[in-house]
Every structure is written in structure tokens, then in C-alpha cells.
Length: 413
Ligand SMILES: Nc1nc2c(ncn2[C@@H]2O[C@H](COP(=O)(O)OP(=O)(O)OP(=O)(O)O)[C@@H](O)[C@H]2O)c(=O)[nH]1
Ligand SMILES: [Mg+2]
Image (tube, rainbow, N blue to C red; front, side):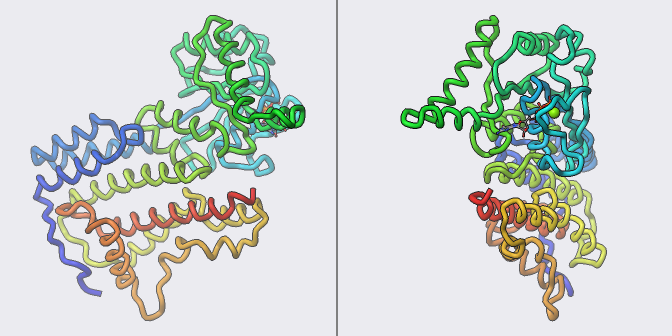
């Protein structure tokens, strides 16, 4: 297949490495960064001094921290308030799926139950017994459910807030943890209001009333009202669920953001874009790490690379919910023929070559496309292993596929 393109970059050119790193991370908004400002500064510092090994080990550590940082989310609240449904929503599973948190009309949650995210193994959602069911004062309740293990609490309520829940919120703050107040089932409130006042029904006003009720209840209990998130577990893209996702990501320690972002359901294009941005940073760091130390230019693509690329592509398809299984599921859910969805996707066919075409030629074609879409190859002067360009392409393609699927099925669910 020969040399695909000549390597004009020089690894020894540290000035270029520094400016590539700086330029790339400067462009990313603070709240979506997956490594801290200090880490970025440290990488730059090492590179400026020509300490390639130093920069490399900072990146390796940053990636390791991202991979291993556990995320534990505690969900509590009144019985029947929608805890299990909320957990299922965050895990992207339907109530009838295997391993779904059991939803029902009777009291099903008597002990704390961990639910691992099906795609992000480091993320666990904990279904806690409602404080009202335990008969403990808040402090004892928090100790019983192992307060220290969670990154934050979500208090779920579908109706009136009881003093117990308000005191629980107080105790969580007192014990220096964060909580989010989620008012579920607003779709039912709106429906009821519409039926009882068909002529004067005003959606925004009704939502505002629910919000005010919550705020007032907190104030009456001498507490600063938290941000109130009104949601429906049945219609995630409506109401405040997207804002809640953004808030959770923003508040988390920086090394935990990547996995939380990847875990979230594809409910809006903005959510899909966030996943893309996060994954792009991750690939960039991996590419950078591999590129920094590469002394021998890799020419073309070898068979081993192809196998690895296939695995990567599949991994991205699963993460972005455009793998075969997810597409079949979406088809069923939106009652559309699976073929109709399959034919609008591009990612399943990315590594398919026509008979007369070698993968090298295919790659060259992609590389040209990539360069024209991005105003040249990434980070000029920085030697990227060529396979990373393909990873960026995979990422762009699964992102686009996820958006196309969302648009195609949105009106049908
Ligand atoms: N319409 C609507 N129904 C919901 C919503 N959230 C939950 N439900 C339904 O309300 C019922 C109770 O929800 P669950 O998620 O089981 O509530 P839970 O808090 O886990 O209940 P326990 O485990 O018994 O304490 C189920 O039938 C859910 O499908 C919502 O936002 N909108
Ligand atoms: Mg439950």
C-alpha cells in the first residue's frame, strides 16, 4: 500500500507540541473539560521544558484517573415517587428490561439496591429506601445508607414534600454532601390540570405553580430553596431533565465528568454533542500520548490495526447507542421497521471495503475528507498515529448517526 502521506512532523519539535496542546484545550469550554486546568498547565510546562516523558506520564495518569474514578449516585424519596423510574431513565433501560430497577405501584424498594450502568461500569445508581419507610431520624438514616459512598443525592418527590424529606436535605448539607431536588410526574400534573380547566389551562403557569410550591415549602422550613428540577420520567427531553444533566456534569469533579457524560441517554442533540466533545478529548489525549513517544513513523495500516479499529468502532457505536441491538430496540419502541432505521446510518458500513479497494485506499479517502472538513490534518507538527484520525472519523460518524436516529424516532415515541 506504500506510504500514505509523508511525515513532515518532527517529534522533537516541542514548540509545536506545546502549541497543539494549548490550542486544543483552549477551545474547550471549562464546564465540558475532562481534565483540570492544572493538569493542562502541567502538560504544557513539561513540553515547554522538552520533558516529553514528564508530559506523557501526566497524560497517562489523567486517563487512568478518568477510567477508574467511580461515580455513585444515591436516589431517595417518598414511596412511589418515581425513584426506580428515574434510575431506569439514567441507565437508559426500560422497566421490563433485565436488570431494570423495579417500577410499580406497591412499595418495592425496601433496601438500598445498586444498579450498575449497562455501558459505563464505573457508574452505580443506588436505589435507597425512602426516609419515611425507615423510621430513623435523618442523621441515622444517612449513616445506615452509607452517606460517604455517594457523590451526591437526588431527592425525588411526586407530590407534597414532607418534613422528613426537608430534614433529610438539611442533614445532607450538614454532612457536606450535595443533593438535587427532582419533582417527578409533572406530565400527570399538567394532564390533570388540562382536564379540570380545559379553557384556562396554561402549561407554563402550571409548571410555575409547582415550582413555587416547592420553593415555598423549603422557605417555610427555614431553608434556602435549592434548584428545583421538574421532570417526567416518561418524557425525558421535555421539562428540566436536560438542565439537570448539565448541572450534574458541571458540579462533578473534573475527572468524573467523562464517564457521566457518556452514560447519559441521547435525549437531545445537545446531549449527543456533549458526549462527542468528551470522547474527542479522550481520544485526543490517547493520540497525544501515543504520538509524543512515537519515534518510528507508522506507515500505512497493518492487519493488527484493522482488528483494533473494528473493536473501537463497535465500542463507539455502543456508547452512542447506534449499535445493532440499540437500533433494533429503538425500532420496536417507535414501532418502525428496523430496516428503515438501519438504512439511514453510516457507522455500520465504515470499515467495509469494496472488493477492488484496500483498507489503505479507503483510509486515504477518509483522511482527505477529514482534512477538508477540519482545515487540514489535526495539530500540524504533532505526529499522530494515523489510526487516530480514523478514530476521530468513527466518533464523528456515530455522533451523526445518533442525531439522525433521534430525529427519525423523536416524533414516534
Ligand atoms: N406519568 C408518569 N409516571 C411515572 C413517572 N415516574 C414514575 N411513574 C410511574 O409511577 C409508578 C411508581 O414509580 P416507581 O419508579 O416505581 O417509584 P418508586 O419511587 O421507585 O417506588 P417504590 O420503589 O415503591 O418506593 C410507576 O408506575 C411508574 O411507571 C413520571 O414522571 N410520569
Ligand atoms: Mg422503586
